[in-house]
Amino acid sequence: MNTTESSVPVSVIIPAYNIDRYVLECIDSLLSQNISPYEIIVVDDGSTDNTNEVLRQKYGDNPLVKIYRQDNKGAGEARNFGLSVAGGDFIFFCDSDDVVQAGFFAEFRDRLIENPGMEMFCFSSELFFANQKTFPKITHHETGWLKEGKIAVRDLLLGNNYTSAAWTYIVSRRILVDNQLCFLGRVHEDHNITMLAYLLSKEVFRTARVYYSQRVRPGSLTRTRHKFDFGGRINAMQGVIALLGREGFRSDPDCLTIKTKYVNSSLIFLVDACAESYAVLPSPVRDELRNFRHNHSYSFKERFLLACPVLYFYLKKIRLWSKRLTDRGKSDG
View 1 (cartoon, rainbow, N blue to C red):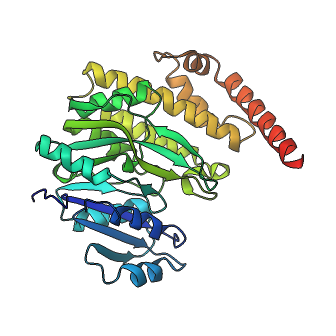
View 2: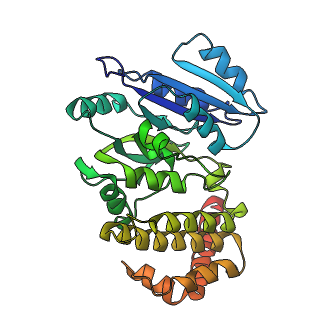
View 3: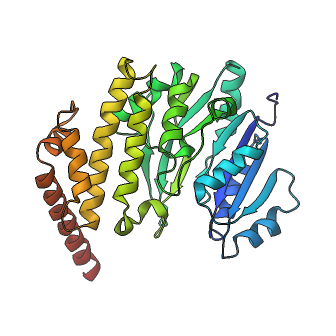
């Protein structure tokens, strides 16, 4: 499949569930690019609102937008289905409430022409709020070519910028299909596939330019902390640890750094999320902290957490309570 002056061989896959308020803005941000993707695959994951209706009403006659519907199985299975029907040489997993910034596919096209062997395109991103304020999310501090994707993920982790979200890259479809990569489960389903996509990709281009804006909204799955599933997050972490222990990864110096920093970052996330959700630190989380208490640490925060996890937990709770009281005082005033 060839790159042209007006299009790129990218299949965009969008899982959509009860998102009628935002999904049109997402798709419009893709269609308004001066360079078009090969196709936009929208998988309605059993929505009970007007998502399917608004999609078909606006894009039913647009040959670029292909709309599918399945019973509710979760975003991971929706992405898996989209991948099974995708025809592009590259895959971009876009979330249905986010938007893509101008120049996204044009930059991708230029890099693919520059190096037809490119297997992954990485970019910076931001959070954006209802009041139009933005905040950096993922920042690639350097722009340029890398021989291996593991360098990109290593640098993201060391810069405390890594997220497992599947929208953080465009990746060769061959990497996913040849290695039988897929999303697992309903929550934290993207940890394994994202890490492996980075580790297996060669000829990677990363850019410091912000091309993706992640919407921050009440009730989104990743931000509903009072329902935080620490068990699922632990399972996801253990899955990544297991894959980093595979032959070919476990003795690689960069992969050892990736594993250590990934574990430390995951433990911080676990404890911070539990501080928002639970009165005491759950014992399974304490067990994981105990297992990795001798991990190398890259900051005082990591050393403190590994050495004194319970104290870290309660200090975090105190900080959260203090912030809530301050915010409440501001709103009352």
